[in-house]
Amino acid sequence: MASAAVLKADKELMIFPLISALAVLIVTATFAFPLIVTNSLATSSSLVFYLVLFLFYLVQYFVIIYFNSALVGAALIRIKGGDPTVKDGFSIANSHLKAILGYAAISATVGLVLRWLSERGSLGRLAASLFGLAWNLATFLAVPILVTEEISPVDAIRRSTELLKKTWGEQIVGNFSIGLIFGLIFVAVFLLGAAGFMAASSSGSLFLAAAVVIIFVLVLLGLGLVSSALGGIYAAAVYSYATTGSAGQFFREDLVKGAFREKTVLP
Image (cartoon, rainbow, N blue to C red; front, top):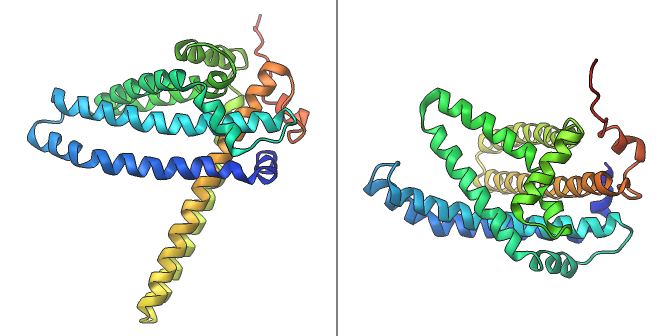
C-alpha cells in the first residue's frame, strides 16, 4: 500500500514498465527467427545457438535494466521529497548507460548458465532453480545501487549481497509479498475471465466472446505493469532505508524497520 501511494503520487512512473514491456516484445520478435533457425539447423548445444541466445539475453536484459533504472531513479527522487518527472528518470538511466550495459552482460551470462543447467536433466533443473533464486536475492538492490553510487556492476552486485547478508535478507519479504498478492489477483482474474468466456461462448455471440478475451488480456497487462512498478518502488524504498535510515514519508518507519532486523550471533 505504501508503494502504491508513491505510484499514486507519481502516476507517470507507469510509463517506464509500459515502454519496457513494449521494447521487450520488439526484442523478442526480432530474435525469434534467428533463434528458431539456429536451433533447427544444429543441436541446442551448438555454439552458434548459444551465441545468438546470449545476444538475445544481452539486449533483453539491457532494455529491462535500463527502464527499471529509470523507474527506481525517479522513485528515489520522490522518496527523498522531490517531484520527479519522466525526463528525470530517463536522465538518471542515461547517465549510467555503461554500468547498465555491464550489468546486462553479467545477467545475460547468468541467464545462459541457467539455461545450460536446465537442460542437464532433473538435477540440472533443480540446480538452475536454486542458483536462480540465489541470484535474484543477491541482486535485489543492485539497480538502486547502480543508479545512485558511482561503482561498477560487479561492485554493485557485491554491495547488494553485503546488504543482504547484513540483514538476513528480510528485505526480500516485501517484494515476495507483492508477487504473492498479485499472483492471487492474477488467479482470480483468470478464473473470472474463463467463466466470462464460457458464458459468452454459450450465448453464441462471437462479438461478446472476443470482447471478454480483449478485456481479459488488457486487465492482465495492466496488473503486470502495476506489479512491476510497485516492485521497483519497493526496491528503491528498501535501498533508501538501508543507506540513509529513511524510506520517505510514504513508508511508515516501523514497517520498514521490521524488515531490517540485524542478525544476531548465538552463543
